[in-house]
Amino acid sequence: MNTNAPMHDLIAFILEIDRLKGVTRQTRPAGMERMENSAEHSWQIAMMALALAPHAAGPVDIDRVVRMLLVHDIGEIDTGDTLVYVEDGWAERKAAELAAVRRIFGLLPPEQAAPFVALWEEFEAEHTPEARFAHAIDRAMPVLLNLASGGRSWRDNGVSHARVVRRIAEPIRQGCPALWAHLEGELESARRRGFFHE
Image 1 (cartoon, one colour):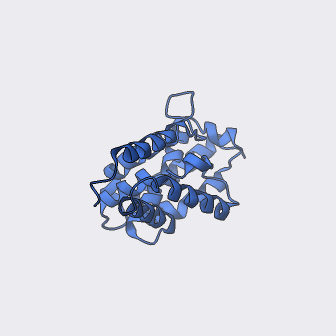
Image 2 (tube, rainbow, N blue to C red):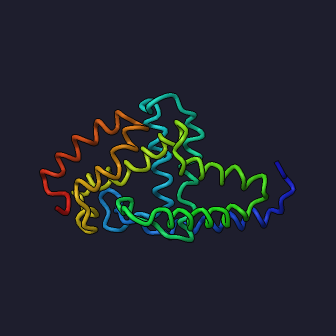
Image 3 (cartoon, helix red, strand yellow):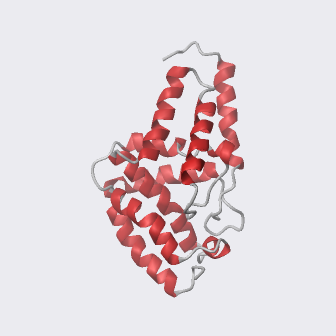
């Protein structure tokens, strides 16, 4: 690793990723009126992965999962957040996000940037057990916050129960089956209680 990289370049990178705190998501933190930001989301799902690691579909390198979750939304600094329940236009969004990821990590020396970009690409491809577990955690967190808020952002954004299940069931089932077993019943209960835009 290059330890001779100018400190001001490294600090420039750190200050650039500070902008993730300004990316507003479509979900409110539990018990709060304001929307969460993408930096909060990344921190929370990294902690969630650590807590749920014993329930992953199979053995995972949890340190790799946490690193993946910490970088997975970095591109939103340039692209903004997209509501997870959107069903169209993902290829274009992900291409723009990859360009942003390369720009942002490109502020680092190449030997530091490349592993970060590779983690982002691994997360997106969902081919490894770590990426599948990371995806399960990422998809579950907005559900948990909506369940805690009576489905507020689901109703605000016109999201139906069927749309939520269609978007999250398979990734969560593949990466963390025990989590899906829990959420499936919670979502059905929420549907009966009017948490969704139906």
